[in-house]
View 1 (tube, rainbow, N blue to C red):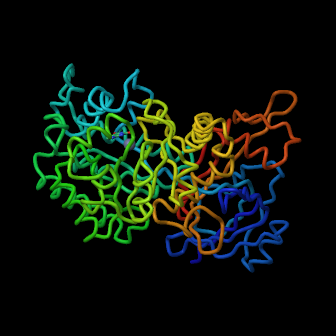
View 2 (view 1 turned 135 degrees about the vertical axis):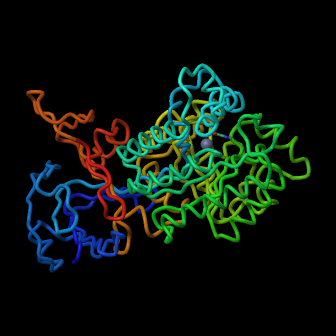
View 3 (view 1 turned 30 degrees about the horizontal axis):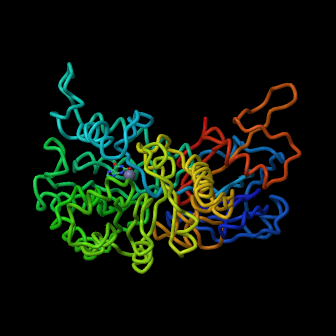
Length: 489
Ligand SMILES: O=c1[nH]c(=O)c2nc[nH]c2[nH]1
Ligand SMILES: [Zn+2]
């Protein structure tokens, strides 16, 4: 049976960084092969009836009010042809988020990267597999790390979906079982996810209570996680392993080399951190004296590939940027985290001008929020500080469409899904969030999403108000590959 759905209403997307495209029309999505691909898009469609006629698909017609977003009769089943009326924006992609750190979101005191790792992060991460973790030192009951992991990972994926994140590149922890659990939960909930078992085994930089014993253990457990992910999703379309050396200082050189070889042999994505903090850059210089730069360390070990996502990249030199570009590696810009941990101002405009591919990351819990909309806001704010540092030149400022582009189309490029995610064109996947700006009448009654629309705003201004004031209350429904994966209650 065909599983076709027509989506009719207003569509907002950013085909290029400078273009906020706002169209009304309809698209026809077919999920019969389980992928949820846009078969047809028609921007001349004027009504639901018109959509049915033009697409030649028999469907019940539901006519929504102009500002209507909810259609109770059409919610739920995806096995019949349905018509959905509302306002729709495309998917959000979080190119860098630490699932395991979610309980610490907002807890970072006055720390900066290296002391934040030892004070807050390693104790928490270790608790997903090590009963001797410092987190359990005052435990009254015997700890159960997997119960803890299960609780956190379920809650986080619900939360990211509720915020419209349809694709995420996750760091888990070093623990195989807990990492596999994250993969299982993401897959079951239907989020498109890349799952990284964290690799860290260098004794000088990793605590005894939280590190792999050897290169061999790192590689064996990474291979086991790759196998687990492949068994869950042999196609790798919805779920795939991503090779995850935590960052250069935490890995033995031999481990970095073997991870580089593994990424090549298995044709997998790689994620890591680069040049986030000046003390970290200095540490890399000390630990890898034979390499020219931080980027060169990854390049030397075969980790700078076209499938590599480099988080932060705040302090890259021009030469490093050129190397990253040459290798076609990608950047995950994590502005909230860079501000929270005082890491610095990432020069995004310069990177875009250099032709680097950049997307957004929340970097929870260096970043305090699991929302990519919040990351887009922070990207705008930080860009203005960069402008201030460059004689107040406004050319550094990121605009609304650029910030939203980074969170959608930019992110699609970063995770290697360009042309498949981030827009509403034929052949693209239906990974979409439905945005509802709500409506509060003069009597104060109505649906309050926290964004006050007065009715006279142009649509581009409404989108700007959403960017600056929206949160998960504006996210109605979320689909990944045509599957409904979240619905706001
Ligand atoms: O923001 C960050 N979060 C981390 O967990 C981390 N580990 C190394 N470098 C890091 N940076
Ligand atoms: Zn990070």
